[in-house]
Length: 498
Ligand SMILES: [Zn+2]
Image 1 (cartoon, helix red, strand yellow):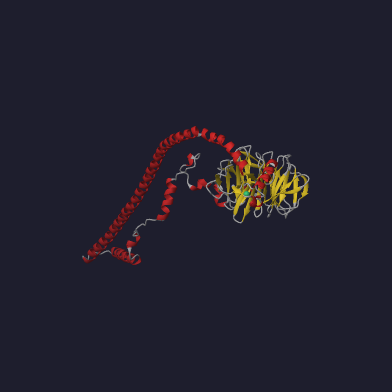
Image 2 (spheres, helix red, strand yellow; image 1 turned 90 degrees about the horizontal axis):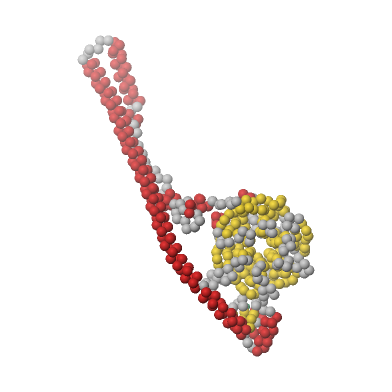
């Protein structure tokens, strides 16, 4: 580095130009000051170094051509296999169609039979009533004939006939319309769903296609099944929750290389030190409010300033300014474990970026867009890394998702909350290297999600029913326990995969 600086100053005198590494642009001597916080190289030597490395880079690329050809062949075989499997699937789709058709026809026939037998019953009842009425008429006419022939001589008979006639006449007065006793209302066909709903109902009955592999048995699952959250994890408290003193707001929890757990606050200029069993060790006054902290393997702490632009370096003796990101406000910070890089999440209004800082506090790289120009962040909040894959994971409060970026700034996935996507405000993210999973706190869902490193939802480590309201900061400690900061408490849980 000092060698570089000497070269730089000599070249400046010669009037040669320079190259700013994070800005990826040539700069002239007059504008060196603008880039004073950036890593700058002298053009000729940078070109020389790059040209020396180029043949080996090209060789490496050439070496992968057989792999690429192999992949093309794989595409062909996979396409063929897919075609075969899809034709089986088509059979299933056809079967389902036949089944629904059969059921529908059965239902249609049942309804038709019902209305047919209704008509038959009406006819039968009408016939019976009709015969009854005809019987009465015959009786009345017979009676009149007998009376007109004048052959009634018994008083008993006469009284009986009179009684019967009066009863019949009364009956017709009381029930003037005999018809009413037989049903005359035509049954009506009732639909519970409108024609618009019908397509949804059909989708429910028929099933829908899912493209998510590994859930083949759910091929015809309806939407309510999809909403169900898997609980593959058992959690239990490692010890009673740590109360957070009222007025204090925990902004970060880290563990140092000597296993001290340090808690920082956005509301108090103090750091609290605990041992790994949450026994209070000491407190340390600091001259700023903490937004986020990270620690190096030598025990130094880098902390971003809450509502500020500064990154402070804290060691056992002193506290110094390491970097100033103004006009940006600083959020999550992370010391990379592989390379001597400090990542800093920065926000300004609705735009955001991540700076990669060198160990002398200069910008080595600005991460803001993909190679294709896609904007990566709006409000990058917290950052984690998978050291073995050189992958970064960043929660974004603007996009309300977790984004994964590889070392070439290519976005690998965005996770939008999986089963809780309608209810997802991700605050913190941590990578667990012991099982290659990600943990993400969901402030709005009162939950902690466990994801695969590829960004697929696995399980809820903490769910609504654990009653840890508004979880924010996470720490995965050396004993694989999770420290979770939530409303007025910090809970420490041990979890086991079921
Ligand atoms: Zn620059």
